[in-house]
Image (cartoon, rainbow, N blue to C red):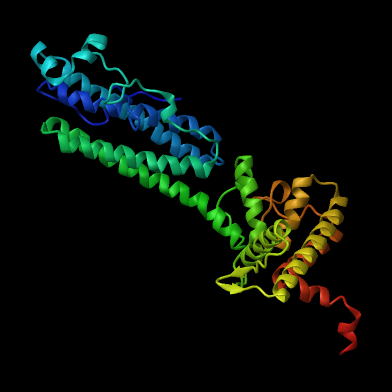
Length: 358
């Protein structure tokens, strides 16, 4: 619940009427980047935030934006409460005055009424926080434009305060986005760190993290996963085969970094992916004998074979692998070694010819 303190966040005492000024300041009341849309955006987005810290930030800023809405409405009212008929006609405020008199109505500076189409609530943490940062910069820009047009010190003092608060909000959303982006960076580089329980994130966000588990780090790194370069080679090989299927007589060599991909490179990549799929499927089947749900089993294998660390559900970032029986743990240990040492060296260890040489 909200607690209303019956005073403005910053004092407003405007002495002179100026309907021309009120005409464009009202855009920050109900305009495309105004305080009404901002407060509704943040207070609506908070429900889908994956962990309490982000929800708290959105609640804090959303309620403060309600206070800013009250401040902008007060500015507009004080600029128009004592205006004369001559001021109304000269400022072009007459069309507004006919409909609303000196009331404060949410609309754009152009006269378009406020609409909820100006706000976005996707339910995805990265998309929503990115939009929030953009919205704060747009609001800051609007206040900058108002300051360029305003010559009343009673008004500019308040507008500067509101502008500063938009900058603070931008910084807070940036910190929130950093927390979310950290999980993405940790997953794709197979670092294994987690600063929050991303198992509570929306389904789309978790699906993205699982896909990043398979992509993994770059070639030559000590990170796990299939590796970015192998995915590039697979994509280029697929494009080459499709082109050849459409035009059998065309010679369409696959290139990477401006260099031709020879047959040996493509062959070893395909064999690696085939071996990866074989080990993943076998491991998934074996640990499924424990009777856990599919998401737990799937992400447990993905987390170990790709050297990620945490998975989802019973092996989530706030859980561990202790729930698995010893035979399943041995399977996951093999997956961890195969993911860290690469698959081929581990498979070679199980070939009889390897031991006959020594």
